[in-house]
Image 1 (spheres, rainbow, N blue to C red):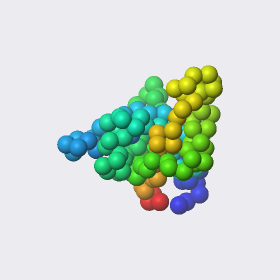
Image 2: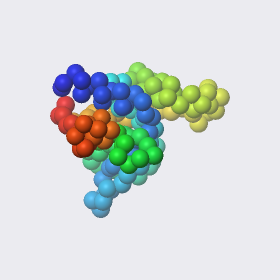
Image 3: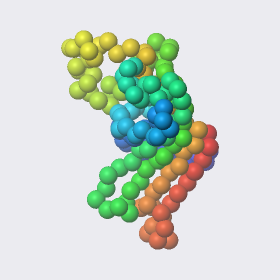
Image 4: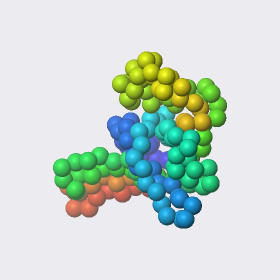
Length: 158
């Protein structure tokens, strides 16, 4: 992957903390949910309730589509990423603790509640999920538009 492209992707991932994740329901229809996330490089962590529809969908089919973007006042200023990935339960307790720590650093109030309330302190490794990206597409409508009138699109396979 081109180093400039890599830096731009990581900057977008580091700048945001919510994403949309699409999973496949048993009837084949996509289900999109907004979730909080934290990343360690290209490893993207999110939490999933073990009895949720999303967890059921992921247990059956680990393919997901992710979208991370901003919400500017002007539609032509949207910058974001879309990714094709596979999501897996984080089974390793050390990695699960790392994932939860990363999430707590993005959501400090939740981190404080974790030390005070049992429901936050008992987050199990079964709830932590890791999305491993296969393909990343970046759209930056701002950077190239001034020079050419067209948005900049980039795509790479990992």
